[in-house]
Every structure is written in C-alpha cells, then in structure tokens.
Length: 233
Image (cartoon, rainbow, N blue to C red; front, side, top):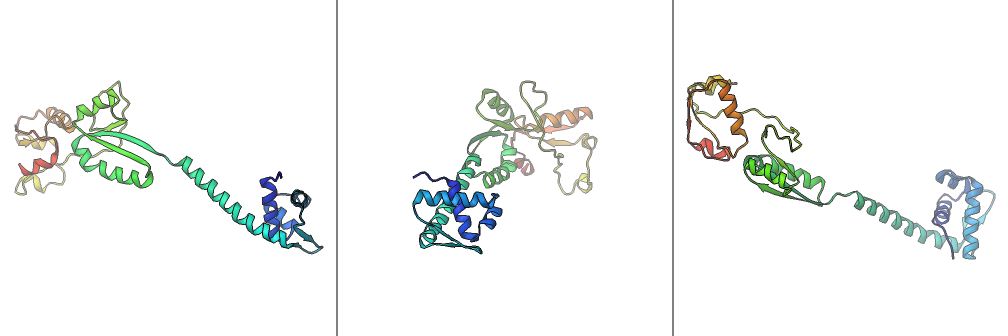
C-alpha cells in the first residue's frame, strides 16, 4: 500500500485537533485539502478512520488505534532526524598543534579544555618544542598550525596575532625597581639581567628592545627555555 508521510501527518493532526479546519490552520493546508488527504488514507487502508459530523470529527476505533501508533512513530522519526542532523553538524577529527614550552604550559591547556567542552569529538595533539622547531613543523606539514611569540618576518607562512601581553620584570623586593608600577626599558641600563635562552620566542624581542636603549649591562648565564626557572636564580 502506498501511503505518503504527508498523509500520515495530516491524519494525526486531524486526530489531535478533532477538526479539519483547525488541522488545516496548524499545518498550512485548506480544509478541503485536509479532508481529501484523510479520504485518500481511508481508501488506501480500506477502513473508515473518522466519523464526520457538522460540529466535529470523531475517530472510529480503528482511527484511534492508528492515531496512537502513528503519533509514537512520527515522534521517533522526528527525533531520529534531529539526531542525524546534529551528527552532521558535529565537528570531529584530530588537530595537531605545536607551541613553545611557555605557551604550552600557560596558554594551551585552557584553550584545549574550552575546545573540548565545545567540540568533544575533536582530538587535540600538542607538540611542545622550541619556537624554531615550531616554525619548521608548520613548514613540513607535521602540524596543522603553531602558536609562537612574534616570529618576525615569515613570508612563507600566514601569521595572525591572537594575544598581546606586556613583559614583566622580576626583581628582589629590596630593589628600587620593585616599588615602580611601570619600569621602562631604559631603567634597566647597567642592571645584571637573567634571561631565557633563544629557544624562547621572547628572547629576540627583549634583545631588540635593550639594543634600542644601548643597554650596557651584563647578562647572567641564562639557558632556560621556560621563564618558570628564572625566579629561582
């Protein structure tokens, strides 16, 4: 038997509204179109489903049984279609990210946690490596993208700034600089500095800033990739 989904939906709506006119208003069909659709369904089944009166539509026993079963089936169908639609919209897969040690330790964890909350089917793989290796990993296609500290001119890669932060000076509480809210670069003239090594992307920026001030102080041996080790010096 050839039933259309539209006929079944029309019949269920009539059963719920107990009126051709109200059912038509609800589903956007004329009263005559609703009546014709139900009549076709009755012809297909060979069973009278409705008793029509001048005031209302009354379901026959067969119509009541059919309406109850169709309501459940149509609800299940709609639920299945919604779930299928969500599956099609849900992003999934693997994203490979490279970042320097400082960024991996202090920025990436929060980003991955938020991304996992929003996109639970995406797997993030983090590669923790020195900044220059991050750049090479991108060039070689080993990762999908990298997060670094100001890489400078890199014409072969597309770069976009996502965060801007100031440098912070760490000094002993007895230092004259400790009471200052803001310490300009020139105030470091003659000071002995402990700096991260060049695996950190921030070191070239610091060198350039000090060079512009004709810095003439002394660098202590600094071979730390992560700034976490500097306060222990």
